[in-house]
Amino acid sequence: MRRFLVKQKFRLGGERFDIKDELGNVAYQVEGSFFQIPKTFTIYDEAGEQVSEIRKEVLTFLPRFEIQLSNGDSFYIRKKLTFWKDKYEFDNLGLRIEGNVWDLNFKLLDNRDQVIADIAKELFHFTSTYTVTVYDESYADLVISLCVAIDYVEMLESQSN
Image 1 (cartoon, rainbow, N blue to C red):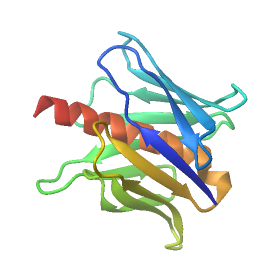
Image 2: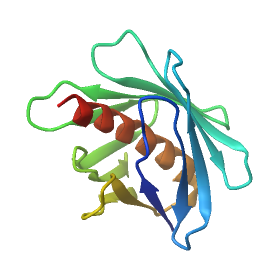
Image 3: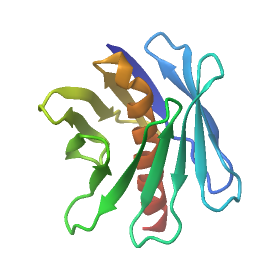
Image 4: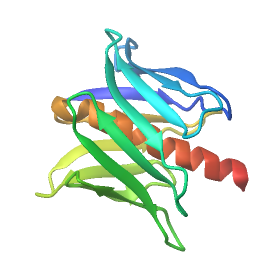
């Protein structure tokens, strides 16, 4: 099991921020493109090796991202059209979200209903701050990539309201 602390530092231009582990050490670095279309995020591990690239698709009605992991796996995350609460679907992944994505309080479950990760927003912070608990470390890169994509969409929507 690994726990990470993510503090949202997205801006409309380029982004660069660290994701720290439970000991306060940098576990991942996120680097966002600056005025590039399509918007991309590249995630690096603590050794500086690229673990994933997230690319926002441009010509879609609702937000959709392609996530390419360094091991060659690729999948899509897309927001569904709903009226009361945000929902996301994954293509080519075999995971589902349960909980409240808008408040960043949700779980990722596999197709056997095993909890892969818990994402929980911390209260009383000026920026969006949340903890990510990954129960199987082999999913850590994937879960962090999903959280960056979802957090970016939620940040854009909160700025437009």
